[in-house]
Image (cartoon, rainbow over the protein chains, first blue to last red):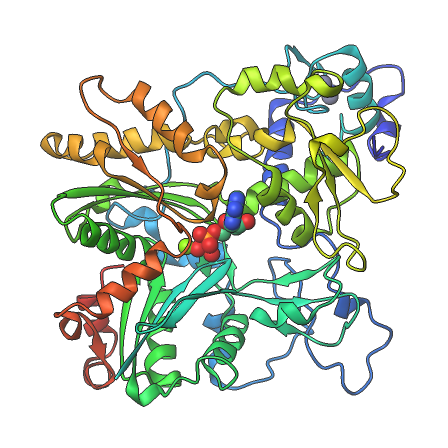
Length: 156
Length: 396
Ligand SMILES: Nc1ncnc2c1ncn2[C@@H]1O[C@H](COP(=O)(O)OP(=O)(O)O)[C@@H](O)[C@H]1O
Ligand SMILES: [Mg+2]
Ligand SMILES: [Zn+2]
Ligand SMILES: [Zn+2]
């Protein structure tokens, strides 16, 4: 098991924190956003020693706002609108005021089947819920691991 | 005049002239740890000897083209002298876009095709429409078909009645191959080995060992058994890119059930991961995405269509996109649909020989169809009428 020590410091002080619904939701959102990422490591280019005259390429970052230091290096097709991210483009489409069907209306509805639960440590079916964070676990062994590793991860 | 068919996927470009065969080429750029200053484009991936820690630069975000800078580099490379040697003034292009593509992206597309590359003519169309064309071409007596396209960014269900796209029945599930690979990376990193930076390697693990379960809870039980009885368990030998160029599953007879391998390779041990990952396509709610899985989405889509057509859709479901290649995908989908659909209606789900290039092949057929000249927009048309003519003629 690869231990991630981040969360544990906050937990051990005798009384356990209990995350409210809003925090749990935020945490889920963050988890799902992480699953959309193109890379987790840094751009190899950006981890180079101080750039020499050849290192002119802009390093890539997935952050939402374009960094100020990036400069336009070529002509026409770098016009502003060719550099917008998904969220900006979606907002500009103004779909909530447009006729259906459209991108927003086409998304699959929630399932009518009951939700299934899996242990967030080992992935097997689970019957118990962590009182602190609402995560699921299947056994006391997995609960211990969960508390030592992830229980309060993804929270701020 | 030549026609170039380009199914421009978020993961791979499926490209080739309508007289020739298709090539499947990464639609992105890469950087590698070993040659940090160089940016590799599309199939230059093959030049990277050690693709561990491979860094991806993708033109698409959530299935929509947002990074034109990267897309242009890939296209320049594909159209250029090293690859397709396109004579733009003498070439027509068929190019695909996602359903409900944003209008600003559509306009950028027109500008780039007609003003920058200056193709003689163009047809912009949904990949699913090419698949439907392919289907009706091979089954001329069928009236309807339901295209399931499960690719890199998402999964779409799209009904077609003859050449007509039934827009109201289109349904999108925000689960695609990218999410599956990232999820697999995540659970392996938590449970046994840090692989968050190894998208390329773990994507291969996914394609090699993951499968769609036919009996989910039964497989969960088997995956919990110890030793040889655990018939789900696989040991995957990771590539080291020197002596082991490509990862592979250890043959079962060579598996060591307890203790360590003496051979010293780096091993991933996979059990429930093998089928719990593709399961997201059938139950997105397993990871907290509040959307129906593919079988329910198909029923949802069909129910929104005229009642007299519904039986035809259940009988003509065609699978496209890379995720449908998971072992067991077709069987599971057909079985679940069988139990969800009205009992008196026959259900048939078909997996073509190559679900990844199925729509490209449809584009190739379309390029040879007698009314092709009527459905394209020529550069002349565009210069005279601008975006309007494209909006009028193309059904995106
Ligand atoms: N044999 C396979 N088994 C499972 N998944 C696969 C297989 N081959 C390709 N894929 C996955 O399919 C996805 C790409 O599918 P594709 O239809 O080509 O996407 P797009 O059109 O969006 O580029 C990738 O996530 C890839 O990992
Ligand atoms: Mg595709
Ligand atoms: Zn557990
Ligand atoms: Zn917890």
